[in-house]
Amino acid sequence: MISVESRWASLRQNGQKRSEEIYKDGELISEKWWNSKGEEVETEEEARKYPPSRCRNQGAVRPRPCT
Image (cartoon, rainbow, N blue to C red; front, side):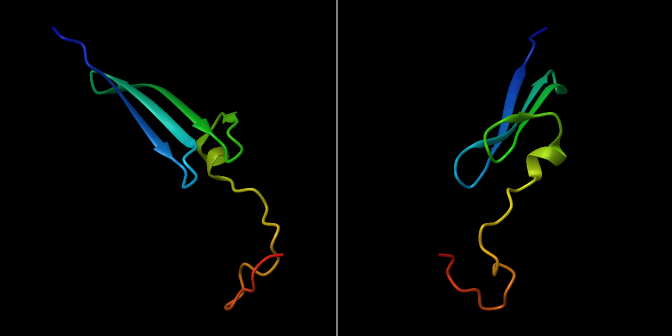
């Protein structure tokens, strides 16, 4: 029987890796996550956290550019 291994990766908009999953014969055997700083973290929840914004008006209806 032939064993098949496949890798799946998801990337952030800036091109950094967010997650990597490795499957062998269709079964998940490894899973890794990275935060927005590029540091490996333990959980998907940690990887989804975004750094605090430096701009105070990002939630505004008509936000002004951050300076």
